[in-house]
Image (cartoon, rainbow, N blue to C red; front, side, top):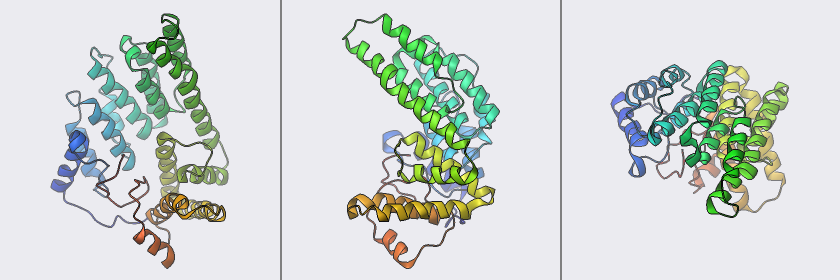
Length: 306
């Protein structure tokens, strides 16, 4: 993989992380890129605890994910003590288990999934089923959706058919949950595939060139492509990304329709240390796209998400 193009001081890293994690709507909109990993670990470990807002936990998750900070899983696991009494503490716990699911070991992710099951049965879950379901998606394929399905179904039985609340819960049970379960099955299928098939599917999923697409799947596929590349298979990952780019080119899309796919793939190839042609480099230089791509070193202040 390529060496980050720049490194900033720890003081500057703290300033950027402070803005991103604690700045709210006026702070940085996207994870600051190419900081020293141990700076990010130390900042989150010392600043994000039960006094922080739920959004700080959510943003810490994206930062920990981008920097592959498995080291933080122990810190956050230690904050789970079944002491949720308020909406704030409940939402914090949802953020914690999502973070552990993203960067923890398989055993840590399984324990986080067990804790998520406890949160499903918590009285505070009823008013935030959408967040509970989002957290299931972050924990896939370790979490079992059945407890949530049972909770949603039981809740539905207490509501007046046709009411706004009934429609809200019905949407989660019969639309959003089945979609999330389908994504979880896809993840299990991909991870259980032979290496060559796995890398191909991950590359297509990350590029958005697959039948299924979601924010969670984009981050998940990016995470696995990084891990596979760091395990010595960067050439295989790059080759599959370039193969997807060939499919995109062969599809004869309009230039505006093709550009987001091409931009994401070329940025990923560059991120992983691949060589771009002069034409590809010029394309990225000319691209006015403000899309935010996970596998990219560019630090885009105007990015919409991250």
